Image (tube, rainbow, N blue to C red; front, top):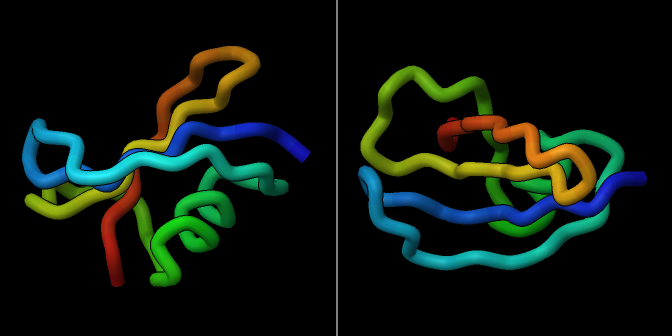
Length: 63
C-alpha cells in the first residue's frame, strides 16, 4: 500500500485535499471522492493524486 495526496481540482484551483492509503492512485482517488474515475482528458473538474514516496503525479477525472 502506498500513501497518496489526493486533491480535487477545478481547473488549476485545489478545492479539497486529503491523504489516502491505497493500492493504486485510482483507488486513492475513488476512496477520497467516493466517485469512479478515469484518466484525465482536459476536464475542468479533475483529481490530482501525488505519490508521497516518489512524488509522481497522476491525473484523473470523474466518470
